[in-house]
Image 1: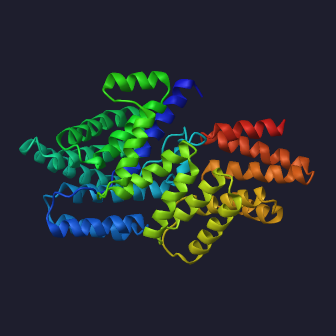
Image 2 (image 1 turned 45 degrees about the vertical axis):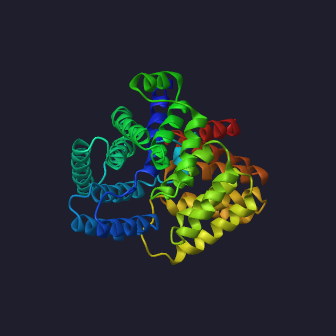
Image 3 (image 1 turned 180 degrees about the vertical axis):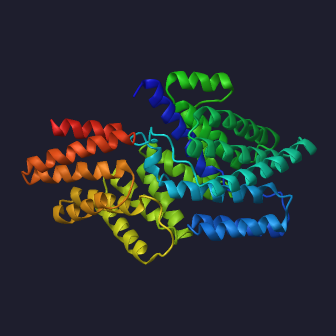
Length: 399
């Protein structure tokens, strides 16, 4: 794959990071709509997606002029599409795996149509409010958040970096305007800070393109702005903490990420994916025993949870716990988990990494022929899903 193509994929994944910051935030609606939107957001973060969609629809009915209700409804449809694709984990936004370089699978037509109808209406209402009162910080906030959601959808669902780039600029500008109108609005620093961080991590050609387009950079400044939003007692505090999970993992500040995860697990105990991320982050931190504990707890929760699974979720649970147990020297248990991972439907990179670990276990057992076959499979699968680092490691071990 060419450098330009890899850069484009990384940029697309970087814009997708903003998916964590576009859920319903500051209110400019009637009280009933506010209550319903808050309830729907809690349902969404608890993985009760169908309930969230229904509650957002009730919020729309309670105040048909509330752009935040329509934006919340659009975000629920966006999450449903992403959930079906299986790219809702932190791994999808780290350097090892950014995005598959295969053409994205089109979303279900009815779901895409529902998203577009909701986001179009949200944009129409938000623009009208800004036009009616250009000095209203809340109106600018709503418009920026809505444009930001569209940028995230274009990047993650349509797979268009340039399209996302154009929308992202609008979100950035609107939230910079919020901070000019009201310097106390630290919550507006979430989108601005996240984009500043993203721009600073792009390759030089893309970074210059972002500067020319009007984006600011600054990795540390961007991260500090997101941290300030997470500390600010606004309605988007949870969204800021979710964004920090990605940023802290990218910065290898795993202890800080685990602190945020502890807060989120306490707030959303029905969101089993928070246990998956706690285990995965513990693994990156070298805390394999903690990882095994989180993952075993999560697998127990999964077994009794009748709600829909994210695509590749069961394979991911097995792979992560298998990796933790291999690191702990529990080879038989690790092999059982890893074999289950490759036998369960899932993303190619999850299967590929599972084959890599099975190959390493075979090497320990002096079963070289089987190890080479696992490494061959790992290289092929990971290469197909844009996990170049693992593919290179597998080819090196195969030789």
